Image (cartoon, rainbow, N blue to C red; front, top):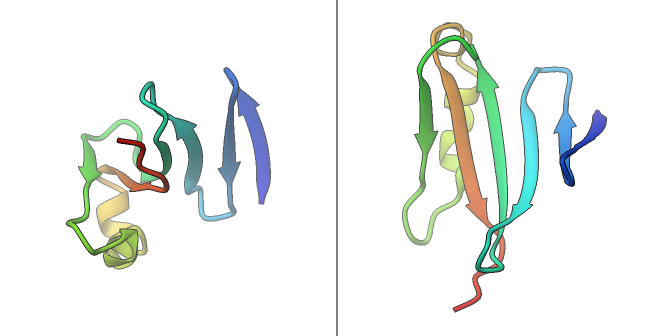
Length: 82
């Protein structure tokens, strides 16, 4: 796994070309995001429901046919600050 820093953010890139990023939103929430696929295709942002996690999207990130056509992004809010 390679680590890259850009504009104050940490990007992790593994050998499957999945990009992972940890950011802090303007209201202080930590958000972990992963993206993979065809950057020239449409982007699909996957948002899981309450009580779930990004694990529900794992099979989509393994689908080479899908990833050749679209760019998938999933998010996981790690901390919530009301």
